[in-house]
Structure formats: structure tokens, C-alpha cells
Image (tube, rainbow, N blue to C red; front, side):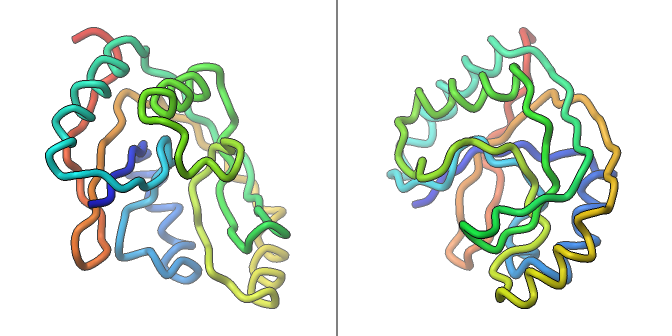
Length: 170
């Protein structure tokens, strides 16, 4: 079974991201717009409770923090992914590090670049056209993040929430 840990932004930001994703992201129907804290990893279904216990502790030790995005960027030439760049903050970086330290470092082929994907699996020409038209777009959005989520993948490839963790002491 596959698990992952993500932050879902506000409905306002999700709606903006989806206005692009429905055209440029084939995973649009499988998961809402999100910022990945822990890449998908394989584990036994029985382990979910232990994961949740560890994540609950991390959440209680983490204060709510600001999430800000200001531009559209790309991972090209590594891969043809277009995304909303999330300004890295100490709180976000620490949360990512804590979670990945707790769950081991599998699937960490890339450095942590906070982002919300708006387009992927594009051909080189598509990527060039789409990114060319979007890269000068200003995205001025800021919100407070007060929770993150442990997800698991269903047989049809879609993702669903196993548990939500509120930041800070309850």
C-alpha cells in the first residue's frame, strides 16, 4: 500500500491551481492540489496507525506557519513539471525534515523544493509553450497553514486522507 504526507492549501489557492491543472496535469482527478511533505512510499496497511502516532507528535510540536507563493516555475530540464513555487520558510523546511527523518529517506532523489504542481508529463514542445506563456504570471497568494494530512492510495490510483493533523498544541 502506498502512503504520502501532504499539505492541502486553502480552497482559494486550490481553485486557482486547478484552473491550470485541469488542462496540464493528468493526475488532476487523482488528488487535489497539494504540497508534498513526504513522497509516496510503500508500507503495510497495519503500519498506518504507527505513522499517524508519529505524525501527531510532529504536528503538536509544530506551530502554524505562513505559506506564500509568488510565481510559476519549472523543473525543466530535469523533468517537464510546471508548478507554483512556494517560498521556503524555516517552519516548512523543518516540518519536511522532521517527517522525512521519522520515516527514513526513501524516495529522496531530489532536494526539497516546496511547490504545488500545475502541469506534468508534458512533451518538450508542450512544456516550452505552456511554461513560456505562464512564467511571467504573478501569483501573489499568502495563507496560514495549520494542518497536514497522511494519505493512502486507492486501487484506482486516487489518493484519500487517512488522518489530518492540526499544528500546535491542542
